[in-house]
Image 1 (spheres, rainbow, N blue to C red):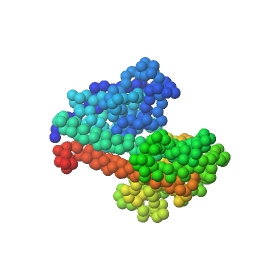
Image 2 (image 1 turned 90 degrees about the vertical axis):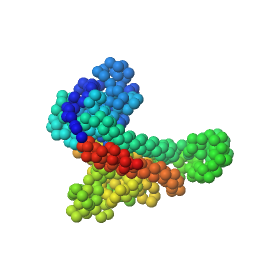
Image 3 (image 1 turned 135 degrees about the horizontal axis):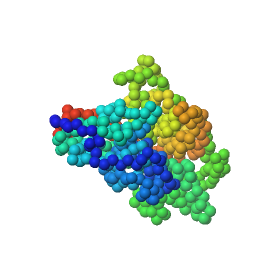
Image 4 (image 1 turned 45 degrees about the vertical axis):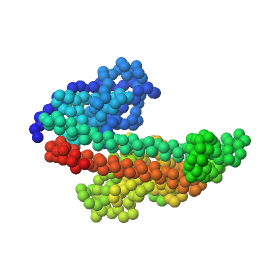
Length: 466
């Protein structure tokens, strides 16, 4: 296959560069994404710790804005990270990043996207960084990065489309998982934080409802259905109705005072430490390239999931791991460094035996609370944990005592079991998609260098997939 070499600059028809100044922000309005929102593990920018700008600032402050199917390219901090701009677009970009548009007379946009994300190109960009404390890859450096582009435009199209389709499938799985996580978290907060079924029962009693009416009130709070819809459910899905009624009956119909304020009658306030069998940091690994066991590090934990492809491996001959292995159901908490500390994820599946390094805390539930109950509780405390680091900026640590002394409202064990049973299908579905994302990521990253180099033809991949 014939290739032609271009500079990165020559491959672009437009660059949106919005100055190196801080944009004025507002309490609400149009999302302003920063460099932390751009990661090569995602197809589109994320909305992580975003700020907002007013419509007037959007209209007057910026030189220009990204358009759908542009790319966002990071120039400072972690230069080279790139994401695709979705359609429609409902954000604008902050400083230290640019929006780039491919010159389609020379390169197919999605091929350029795949090429920029390749390990070879990322390595070239890393070697071109300037700046000691904060790496830079300035717009003026775009002319010094040279990229080989196939002269066969149809080949570019097939490679770019294949790469994009794999990225899109991974993205869709993540979006579904985020929706499922939001559902589980909403149920947990309704039941065990806001006590909505209990308060619904109390309101029904105060309104003079009989026992059936009180139960219906709790069933409505749990399901979001009206009395008429509950009657219909009883007629059409009697088993589902029975399960809902059984759950509603597990909630008390009175409130009591506690050190945390009002909680359901008969429930207890406990410390998290008293409800765990494990609360510890991981090992100090002795790394090897192959063999041993995988070691999860803080980079692996993001968006409440674990990217095992970023894990390294520990030499078990030099650093023993017996009794230190993690288990399905463990909650892992990043415990070092501002911006990283506090991120957490639950182990929903394990591709193989694994441990964590010393920057991560393992939290494991005892039989008194279930692992899914623990996960949802920990998610409600994520912001608090993130703000609980101690030490200097570069050495911020999460002390074990912070987690041990967290207060948790514990309902009766039958209700916890009920929540675990109800949440298990959600967790299993999330786990299946996480595994599929890992597999698709491995396939995509293994194929990409071979496709970019021409070592492997797109036709061969298409035939293998049939």
